[in-house]
Length: 295
Ligand code: ADP
Image (cartoon, rainbow, N blue to C red; front, side, top):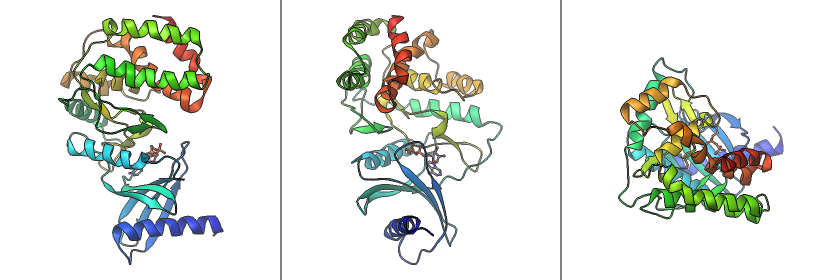
């Protein structure tokens, strides 16, 4: 075992001891090195209990505390399954999140229908405070400012689009010409989007965050939730594909949306696209320009 691996084993052992108690011998570890900045491990103890631990180098303060709150918030709605949280903390200057491990299963025949129904149930949770959330959370490594606003379109413009736009302008990824086009689009948005009441959404719903649990059904991981436009969530699912048609049919049967959604998808997806420009680079800019130019 290399010194580095040994150090990782000891690090994980300390977290387990802190949250589960002493005399908990680790039987097996499976490391996940995703494309992201977080590292993760599936831990199996001698008594067969399993946990999933994510950590980073301590350079994203508050990220896992927010993720734990996100998971608890969605979990409390009892609408759709998410892993339960064991705890968060700092160990050896690294920040971590320890949660229930979700072993992967095979999709049941009704996986997509069940998923669509449960997402509709989640979205039926609304907030009297309007659009937003009580705390700042993160989508990937990007902070999401969630200052409440009763007006969903104003929230979407200010705290989703403009917030990312400002960062991209600051980083010189977006020039004055494109910025001006965004401002024109912002003026038009109230006539382009239905100003629905807020819905609790997962916020980062791509297929990589939709797991299949041992019952063959949906468990969501890695939420970037807030009370916002549920259409934005549905639009997000189309960004990288992978969601079955029966998922959408089941969703719409349980919680219909206004006509014309397909034309609105690009507008909602400006947000994740701008996040991608800021986090991963200018490769995502042509897609942004194409949408803004078409309005
Ligand atoms: P990141 O925040 O680094 O993107 P994710 O939370 O998306 O990490 O997790 C990365 C992958 O790890 C997921 O796609 C999923 O396959 C797996 N995973 C996440 N959470 C759990 C869990 N609680 N139990 C088992 N596997 C998990």
